[in-house]
Figure (cartoon, rainbow, N blue to C red):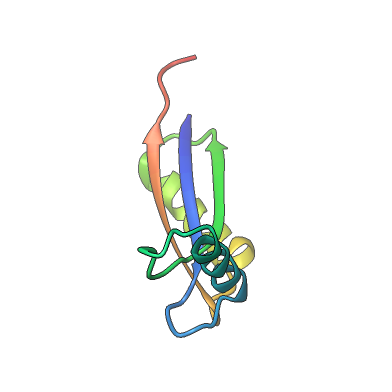
Amino acid sequence: MYLAQVHVTYKPSILDPQAVAIKNAMHRLNFDQVTAVRQGKYFEITLDVPTTDVAEAQIEAICDQLLANPNMETYRYEVKELANQ
């Protein structure tokens, strides 16, 4: 069993209006030292596969086909083997 932790965010060239609104709210709360905010999506996916290589291949496919829009978003992930349950 493997656990994949996936982070999906907008590419740096894409305007992120929600992050801009969050930053503006932080400034209104006097957190003026905040210079940038990026928001995104986080997923934890458990896979029952035989190897790390298979888990990573499946996560790549899931991210490319479902979780991230490759035109606007980028993703990164970490795959960890779970202790025997």
